[in-house]
Structure formats: structure tokens, C-alpha cells
Length: 482
Figure 1 (cartoon, helix red, strand yellow):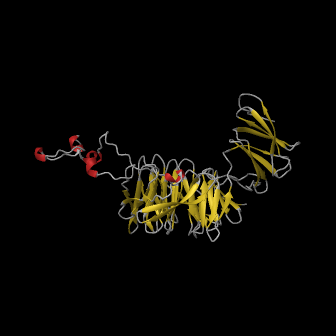
Figure 2 (figure 1 turned 90 degrees about the vertical axis):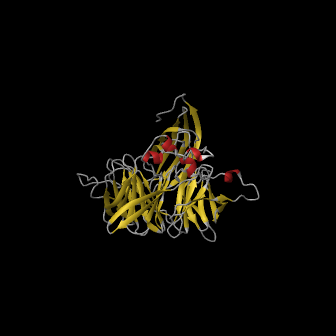
Figure 3 (figure 1 turned 45 degrees about the vertical axis):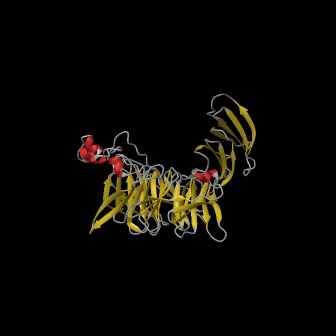
């Protein structure tokens, strides 16, 4: 496994000897990205892991300043950007496959970056930070300078993306708001102009602005004078009058979950309530698309779909919910029809196409990664099989052998090959586990659990470990076995 590192900032040994990383095993907790047609990458601890989806070869890039924060990739330039997680974090930009550092971006952020996004053309990078700044910044990453920035106090954003057809447009969405930001430029000066999308009500209808500004019960005869806005009745002036809403007048709006751009610079928005919206990228006019019901009753799982992730495809979008299915939304005019596309064993949290649009990457909530290849005979391959939960313990099976075992808190035991960390076998205890210890002489292992039991596992056959005995020791959890 190849490795890259920031040599100029890493620690140096006094005696000349140094340790090198042979491989890194970890599973994605953030979105997986394509860096070119054949390579995906994701952050894992102090590393960024690259996997060739054809050869399964891994390459790692180490962040010498600690844990890797958020990351993004620029496919045309074949670069990857990631932040570190420390006080006053930095953003690093590396080239691929050389893994050489192109630049280091230093802003005025105090705690952490939460989102990074490259434009599809040019050398622009957008970043968004968490509290206390809640700052959106536009960088020229080649020149290492901030072109413009704007703070939004208290505004958390969970998705940010450039318009693929126009780098001067950004969409920022959260569970309560969707906004489109335009980057305006005069010579070398840049500035942001933000416009908020007026979301429909929870039932998909639009409210009347007059009903919000004026009293709901209007007099039929206006002989006694004009009808005053509610803010005037309350005696408010200035900005307070413009934003005033009575406490009793609550209009719950739709809650966006995910957005994606179209080739016509429009936006599709998936909502928690199951609605699918289309937003005109220029006017921000919102259209609630109508779902076409089939003649035969739909299955229960298709009656209500709250999209977790959306990707644009020809004639519509691919969407996934929490039921482990990927659906194809065929959109025509202002209506759409739902068709089953693919079934995955776990809820799907992220999907993205390869740069050449021949491969669809599917990432589950557990961190497993599948590759769906389009063609005359489509195929679904598992590139990364994630373990169920965090690693709780690790031990060698026998000193001098090429195998070791890991234990997760959920009770999953894996046997791994030491050379390249390939998973040889798995066994599930279906109980919460606490500790693992291997017995070199008998090729067995003991696992302690939360319920006070100890499982004895034979690993004589590395490819088929078996539970040979179970003993109950106490009513409290087992914290140590020898």
C-alpha cells in the first residue's frame, strides 16, 4: 500500500530510524468521493484512504496535524482537499495520484470546517464553518486566497454544491431552509448575493402572503378606514415590522433533506414529508411535483419515501430512503412516477456517479460501499464491506502467524490477513461484546460480553471460526479475559 505524508511538517526521529504505515483499515463515516473514473476516497481517522475500484488496491495519505475533518475532490484537476480538526484548522490541497501537496489554505476559522465543495470548472473552492462564525467562503485554491466570504450567525448547513453548469451559483440547504447564492464579480472583486427559496407548507400547498401580513378576519365594509397590517397594529416599525409574525400564526414548512442540480440549472429537492420539489435556478419558483399513482396498489414501502440522497439521471432522479431500496423517479412535466431500481441490504446514505457516468457508487449507513456498473448486463459489486460498529479489541491469533482478530462492540468478530488486511472470515455473536483474548496454544479465542457471558471460539480453520462453548460468569459485564 502506497503512502503519502506531509514531510515538511511531520515528526522526525532523532536516531534516523522511522516507522512506516503498511496499511490502514477503516470505514467511511462521511460521504465517499470519486477522484477519477476508477478511484474513490474517504477520510478515516488521521488518513485519507484511496481505493481503486477495479484492482481494490489501497493508497493512504496521512494528515500529520491530527484527524482529517471534511474533504472534497476536484475531478478535472485530480486534486483532493481536506481540513484538519484542531484549533484554527487549515485546508490542504493534494494532487492525485502523486499525493504531493499543492497548497495550504489558512483562514480565520476558530473551530471547524463542516463542508467543502469544488466548482466543476476553474480553481474555486467553497468552504463552510461551524460556530461561532457560520462562515461561507470562496477560495481560489491555486492562489491560496479568499475571494469573498459571508457570515450567517446560527445557520447550520448540511449540504453545499456548485451548479455544474455555472460555477457562479451555489446551493446551500438545511432541514429548514434552501438558499441559492450567486457569486458576482467586477474585475478582481467578488461578492455573494443570497436568495432564499420560499418553501411550501408541510402539506405541499402554498400560503398566501396576504394572510400572513394582514389579519385573517377582514371586515367586509372598509368604511371605518384601511385594513392595517398586523405589525402596525402591534405598533412596530422598521425591520421588526417586516419580520413580525404573531405567536399563534405558525405555518410549518417542508423540511428539505437533499438537493441535486440538473443540466438546465434547476434544482430537485427531496423533503422529509415525502414531497419532491423542482426549483427554477433563475427565478427560484417552486413547483411541487405530483406523484402518479399506479392502477395496482403500491407496496407500503413506496407509499411514503423520504429521500435521504438524490442523484440526477436522465429523465429524473435516483433516490434512496431508509428502507434499503434505491428508487428511480421518472419525472415528466410536473409529475413523477416511482419505480424500483435496486435493493441493498442496508439503508443507503449516499450515492454519486463516476465522472464518466458508467458507475453508480452506493454507500450504506454502516459504511459499506457498492459499485453498480451500467451496461447490457448491469452488475453490483461490494467494494468495501464495513464492520458492524467500532473496533473494541484486537489480538494476534498465534505469534508468528499472518492472521489477527478484531472485535466490535456489536459482537462481530473478524479474522484478517496481516499482509494487506484482507478479511478472511466473520462470525456474529448477536450480543454486545467488551473484550477479546486469543490463546496461542489452542488456536482459540475468548470473548467477554456485556451480559456477563464468555464465548469460546475455535479459529483452527481461519475461514470458518465457530463458537464451541459459552459460559455465564456474572451478572455484570466482563472487562478482562486472559
